[in-house]
Amino acid sequence: MRAQSSVLTLATVALPLVALATTVVPLSRAELAARADTIVRAKVGPRTTVRSEKSGRILTRSSLTVLTTYKGEHRAQRELEQMGGTLGGATLVVPGDATLAEGEEVVVYMTCAGKQRCHLLGLAMGKFGVRTGPDGRRIAVRELKGLNTQGGNALDSEPALLLEELERELVKGAKQ
Image 1 (cartoon, one colour):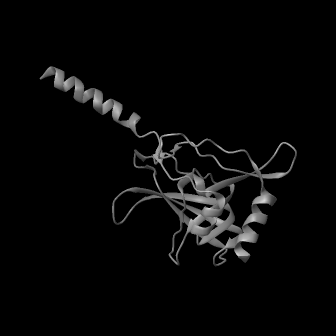
Image 2: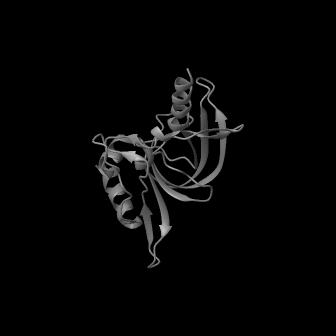
């Protein structure tokens, strides 16, 4: 009986260590753009954490002030909803999902489908952080920590991409 109790305790303690990554099919930027119905460059505004009315899961909603619309209906404001966050002492983490910070500038690939709230496409694959590079040029950075391929290989963060190159790609794709 005591041995069973020790195994149960060990399993309970080790359980949070099991889900360190999410398995995904890696998508190229072109594939993400084709699947997204909305792609915008935006400034992340206030974030709120709530419980889902349907499932009770913790959700984080980020207000986005749209700076540029590359694909989809242009709206000055969008709301991005992601599973996870901290609410009332409980925390839900989705490994491999993108993290958004208030004040951050981002390019996001989303599915909105005429709904009030949009959802990020491809977890962290669907978000580029916009920053100023060491040479003063604007760059787009995608961090893929917590994402694995179906073969179990971790997707590593990619080299930074010039923002103007990403924008050219998005504008060209929108015309096709």
